[in-house]
Amino acid sequence: MIKARYVLDRYLLRQFYPIFFVAISMFVFILLLLDLFSNLVRYLNNDVPVLTMLKISFFFIPRSISYAMPLSLLFASAYTLGDLYSRNELTTVFASGIPFWRFSFSLFIVGLIASIFSFYLDDIVVIPTLKIKSELSKIALHQVVVSSDYDIVIKTRNDRRVYMVDYIDYDNRMLNGIFILERNESGKYVSQIRASSAAWNGNYWEFENAVIYQYENGILRIKPMPYDTSYIEPPDMFMRNAVNVKELPAKQAGLLVNDLRISGLSYYEAQADYYHRYSFSTTSFIVMILSVSMGGRFKKNILLMSLFTSLSIAVVYYISEMLSMAMAGLNYIPPIIGAWFPVVLFIFIGIFLIRSAKT
Image (cartoon, rainbow, N blue to C red; front, side):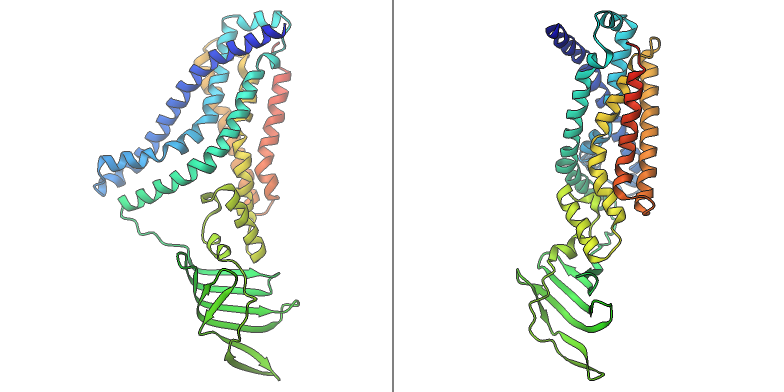
């Protein structure tokens, strides 16, 4: 009996994989065309060569695969099960005493593996290639890139030290145009430091032409800043605050969220995006559960109904995800709930539908 079930698993996967590869190729191609045509007018207005357009589209392929994978899994599994049902093969399986969830178990494993693959695909491949695509597109369209490494404000040590920096030199690890405000535990003014620049020596900041403003006997006095090694906030704290969490790998994104929290800046949206990095990777597993739950419900017009069902479920899921993420970014709900609530909700919906499916 156990051997027969493994034979059925292999048979189901042999029916599933060809449809999946055709579906993901089709959806990736559609996404590439949508990206190309959405920018085609601007490309033509700027006389962008065809080879440059193709090069930009090439670096969009990983992102297209990431977007297309859940939808392709959803369509392929729903179509495969619907096709088996229309040929009365599912009826034979059910008559043998094998539950529907056990017959579809191999598809759940595929969805789980796809989710793990999706996370590492986004973290290792999609983020770098998307950055290259963005840079190539800006160069081709002659767009001026406004850097976010100006006017950085950082709070440290429970808001007792506030850095205001005019400009950050990433390559040389230098701060330029520095104003530092020191406060005590109650938030009252202690001193302020102004310096033309500061260089990171590996352990702390060394200030150039620094002066300190302090009250002495009720009089505000200005004097050269004495030698001080307590300014140990690392350069990465300033650098990470000049980028978007979506542009960083998961490990760096976690450090950015921590920097924002320590600095006293708003971190809710960044934290929601960080949690969403993990929750979004489970989409392939979720849609597999949903598609299996819908697999045996259509016996006619399998292709049309599978495609319609796939698109409908995907739209509902992504809309609910967008709403919860927006609420988390505005701090209406905790970031972790904003990222994971749609995941948990649709898993329960999928389990309920599977329990009510024909068997």
